[in-house]
Amino acid sequence: MNLSFQVVDLPLKHTFTIAHQSRDVQDTLIVKLQDGALSGLGESTTNPFYGMTITNMSECLENFRPIVEKGEWETPAELWDLGRETFKENPFAQCALDMAAWDLYAKKQDKKLYELLNLNPADIPLTNFTIGIDTVEKMVTKMKEVHWPIYKIKLGTSDDLAIIRELRKHTNAVFRIDANCAWTAEQAIAYSEELEKLGVEFMEQPLGKDDLEGMKEVFKHSKLPVIADESCIVESDVKKCHGLFHGINVKLVKAGGITPGLRMIHEAKELGMKTMVGCMTESSVGITAIAHIAPLLDYVDMDGAMLLSKDPAKGVVITPEKISFPEGNGIGAEMIF
Image 1 (cartoon, rainbow, N blue to C red):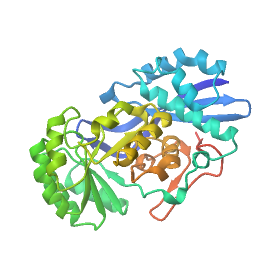
Image 2: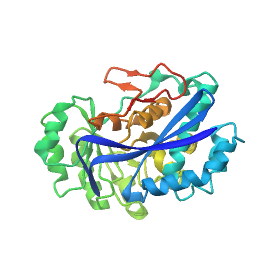
Image 3: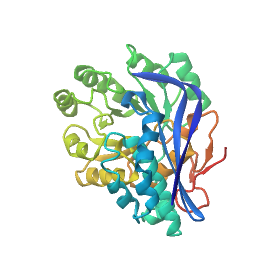
């Protein structure tokens, strides 16, 4: 067994802005597990908001290399458990390794990952396409560049309602809005009334992740469903979100990979909550991995590779009409440069 990884820069088509950061290029770490003729790929982007850098992800992987390469594990879940202590402060690095382990493991079983998980790709919900914060004119232009049935609109400005009103003039698509913790409870409740009229499906993380009292009020009085993102990072957060949110958005990089992500999805379902998996601005390696587990979900946000001007990998192809998986087993994504 051999572990290797490489740093890749992902150039974006447009500057991507959310409530707390902007970027034109996203750096990402591609992890590879090689066992004889078979190999698996995984990915995790850096994220300054969560303190995840190429340096600290690489250090974690190097520290864990002896255990990985010793090969005394069979399943991805076994490897994940072995790394629990090493990666407890760096779930992003663990995600990339876990993803590569699932890719390799499914290939060893001579199956695609969705087949290994007994999932039907026909059940995958359509992803939204994300429009980052910008001038209204540029947001309209971005929408017109990519005609899509569902848009996720990033908000967190002083003119959020005005933005949605203007965007609504240019499309009949479903809107989902993501305030990235930028609102107060009073704002979220008040905004929800007009947003409902403007064809918004749900609000994602309207309040700060620790504003539990505020979320109780929003959950009680909002005219729209609310989905947890920053409030639902790891497995122990799922139960905490019950009764405060109608659903959870699992980010594999924040959770530590596919292994805990699957557990979070199943727990939320048992609690009667809606489930969603979101992405970072990832290449087709990370996005293709999400697509394999997407049949489990009510909503999916896997447009990251669609936001790139140059994708270093090839994998799942997403159109409004269908999802086309690569031919190979496992996750099936491949690096092309």
